[in-house]
Each structure stands twice: as C-alpha cells, then as structure tokens.
Image (cartoon, rainbow, N blue to C red):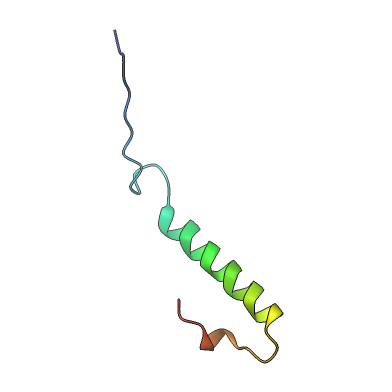
Length: 45
C-alpha cells in the first residue's frame, strides 16, 4: 500500500524560473505606469 507520495517541485514539474520572471516583469511594468518618467532600463531585475 502506498501511504505517501512526494514530488520534487524544484523545476521538475513546474517552471518556476519563467513564472518568477513573468511576475517581476509585471511588477516593473506596473511601477512604470505609476511613476512618471521612470524607464524600464532604470529598474534592476
């Protein structure tokens, strides 16, 4: 009988790098729309 199933989610089943990058870009775009004169090149990724 199987009592426990474990998954390694460190990139094995989910692409965390892409979702993390997408989240950062959304935050940066939001900041740019809120801060007049701010350019995307001024933000560190």
